[in-house]
Image (cartoon, rainbow, N blue to C red; front, side):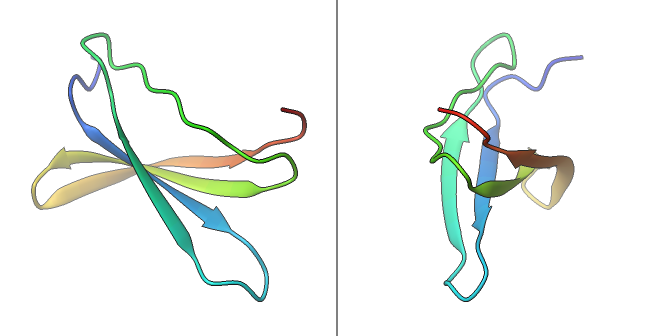
Length: 64
């Protein structure tokens, strides 16, 4: 089941730097895209309801 029109929070994880959150929306198919910087690690979570979110995983950007 795709998560349509939901907010995805991408948290850039960096040592000795403040956390940076970016938010994007999924489309009608549940697909999203975001700009990422090479060599960074991002924690990804999707908003299921106003009070509930689900951790999707961690993405490491190796090239890009």
